[in-house]
Length: 279
Image (cartoon, rainbow, N blue to C red; front, side, top):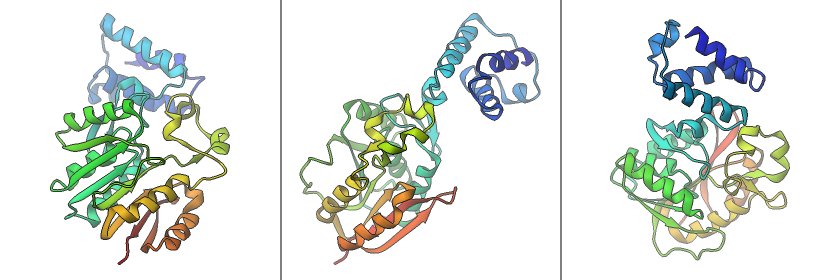
């Protein structure tokens, strides 16, 4: 095990911090190769097969190119479920799981849920799992993302109706939903300079960025269309850019939404908004 750890450090030690190298080494050993956790932590001797050696070499080359470890593994765990992830979809974030928990805990009897911009399907599928009686629909503009989401739905035994829609151009749907949720593109173009390379180089820009001149573009469009698609008393949930929480709250107030709540994530950043459609 010591030789493996030294090999990993030598290959990527100049590309990542010491803490990142340690975390990546554990993932390579225990998840990519399948070395038992106890063997890893006790640093017991291991013998690798040629296939395992090749798999490690491939992973290290991809890590040097700043490819996220989740894409290398091909999966990511989220809300107790496992999701296939590819460069066609964003990697699910821990703060998004907080949004799912908020929705599921507040709406255990919801009947119809719509997830706009579903990506990997992590929100829609997790809600279908947590609120099993609900009918869940999920939209995305990307057919590649929808293919990944459908695979994840099947793998997790959850029924979700996936549809290709561009929320910016599609007409308002005739269906009514108790819950509409979205984690839309919310990173401004000007914020690219502060982003990590593994995000900027590998994750889909279509799902990340919004024009500097109109950072509320997706929130406003969804909120306007949701007025026609939510049931009376239905709720709209957003994951948001932490810099625009108060602006989003004001926009929702102007549109007539009630009981607007702005919540912080585990890192104490404004991250989630809930609003209720009034009478």
